[in-house]
Length: 292
Image (tube, rainbow, N blue to C red; front, top):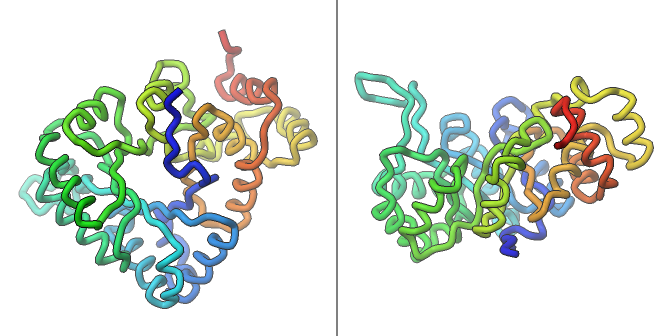
């Protein structure tokens, strides 16, 4: 058994991708209050990426930490780099592309640190596998960033097993996580060996889109949801999170919603164990087919 101990006491991670959709939270003092609310709930890790709002989400988060400096010693940040959207491509081709290059990542880490106003990023991820990846040179850059104290851990995002294994082969550092899609609505990794590869290689699964894209209420019979609620006390949000957390290795949901009621419901689910038959009943309903 090689289950990762990375973030083992973290029930879920609030994601900052949609921060700009909440105009009220874009005010530093208001966001600082929101962050404190999450800390009061026991949530200390926050997920970012340099492309979220073209860096604005990181910048606003950093301003909130400056507005309430006491928060800087309490929060931990995950961030990612390596995707260049088409509108940021300054070449004549204006094409979305990936940049898992050593020099690019060195600069990306420094830029994220500057925007976030933190001294260290907990974990820095390669946002997408890059077919042009020079694993050896990128690994040296990431190792140097860890040695310098700029980042504590390294990880990947949206990688398949042989993609992360090639990177792992070229670095002395352990890859601690893979942030990839996993939910009741995207359960295929449970049946093709991808999930077991995470467990075998000791990578914590950070699950983006953990709420099945909001599809649970429309895809699962209302009678099942109602019976499940009576049995567990969980709404659809809580059921989706409880289902995910019950998997071996306890994947950690990266929650896209910043609504406090949604976070509270997700936390309740993260702390609830479903009856095994209900776990399979939800899976069967979403897949619209019985397990083999």
